[in-house]
Length: 264
Image (tube, rainbow, N blue to C red; front, side):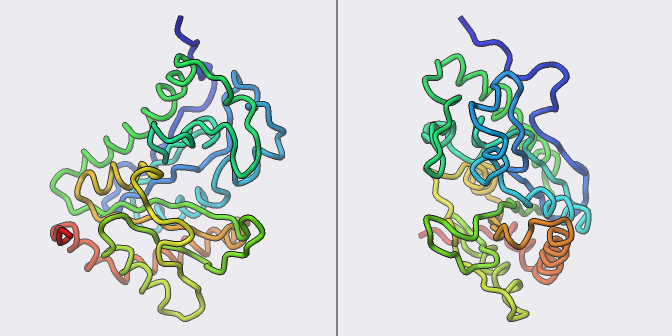
């Protein structure tokens, strides 16, 4: 017996595409843009206050991504539902794809799922989001394209303060990340992390390995510390800062799209 459809007809779609035909050489994605949970899942058994925390989404990331897309005239794909329902940046085999606990918080609505219930989440949210990214990228065939994923991270994890204002992470090809780090550090007022607070790894990450490395595109993940993007004004300021950094490196970054990395 299959599980019922996850989303009801009047609920928001699983993703949003902003400016799909934007002419910029960069495509933006935001995997953890929303903390919304489908009504059918009854908040996954969590209080509303829990769903506002980082375990459910990346606060501030969507606002920064929208501002950056507008400033660069770039396409942007945003997730529509919480990472706790299904994490769009986790491989399907990773337990964190539908996590039974996150940062020590149990997620009752994710326990004991049947194969049909898991598949309903993938069919409703995971696959449509990644198909939307594929459509945007497929529509740019023959055009130099760079992929940037916008995330945010907690200022303190497990009692340890994280000093970076922003981190830039990469997978196998570090060249784009190195350009971005240099541009962001140029003013001397930021602590910029190199593969911090998280590196990109195939067993943890999905979006950059599949849509970036899988297509041979220069790709990087930008992580913003959440205490720097919590207000609309702060998010807007980061959008401008990232846009300025991109414009400084754009010519070099676009050249990378035609220059495959050296094999190790």
